[in-house]
Amino acid sequence: MHETIHLLKKTDFPKIRRGKVETLQVNLGYKCNQTCVHCHVDAGPNRTEMMSSETIDTVINYLQSQNIQTLDLTGGAPELHPQFRNLVKTARELPCHVIDRCNLTILEEFGHEDLANFLADYQVEIVASLPCYLEENVDKQRGKGVFKKSIRALRKLNELGYGKNHKHLKLTLVYNPQGPQLPPPQKSLEEDYHKLLAKYNVSFDRLFTITNMPIKRFGSTLVSQGTFDEYMQLLRKSYLEKNLQSVMCRSLISVDWKGDVYDCDFNQMLGLPLSNDGQIRTHLSELIGVNLENNDIVVANHCYGCTAGQGSSCSGSLN
Image (cartoon, rainbow, N blue to C red; front, side, top):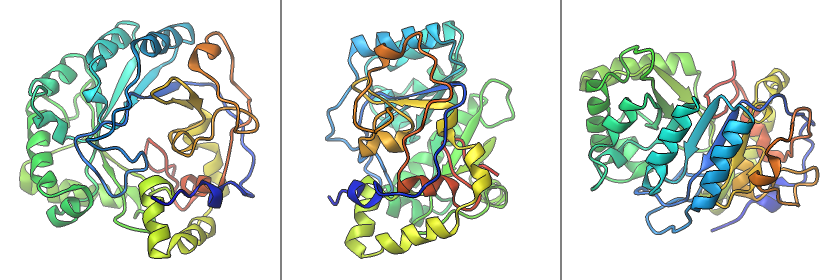
């Protein structure tokens, strides 16, 4: 795999500072039941990295001590972590809003047949990746048969009340472009998704569009195809200053499976930890009781992916 950090570090991206931390995004590990082309985490079935019990206890302590509003669980497939359900239960009791970054096919994996019911019982918001509404495109990007499995999973979630404008059972789908281009406008694409997925008797609440980042698996593909520089030029050319006010790193911190903290999930994958120089690693246990507001955010050229065009974050477009 081609690493891209050396192509991104030298940057003229504007300096930005953190606001109040409202969301703790936690990567429970890189093990996943899928291997997706666009995956910036490079997750897959053979990955073994998993968060320890001690670090999960630290996550809970941080949520409580800092009065964090939202716990955003990701991976890999976060549900594959053996303590996923206990963490969800504890966070909901605080109370804390919980988001599960779900790949949908996990709902059909052996041992997870009751997962959808569990998520509904604890009113977990599901943010589910479905990078296209066409079977051929989804299977090309995520693996053969993934589209049909995803549709079955979505129907199961619909039966439980997800995607039906239920106040506590929110179902969001996530779109990623197929290649080195920006996603189309979120609103119009969401309308297309609603129309075409209705043919499969599937409904959902909203759609997020997320720009592919030139890092890890996708970045390596760009380098192999000789399109890395071209894609970076697209991101830079599409930069909009107004998006700086809404980028996710202003209100979120990201924690990896070891408990180290980063300004965002993308910095985590690039190994750029939460610090002024992007070198010294900070463990979450060191931040309990610490106010991070107004701290500098570590930036590099991949940050142009969050500010390009309509903008992109873990919560979809920024405008």
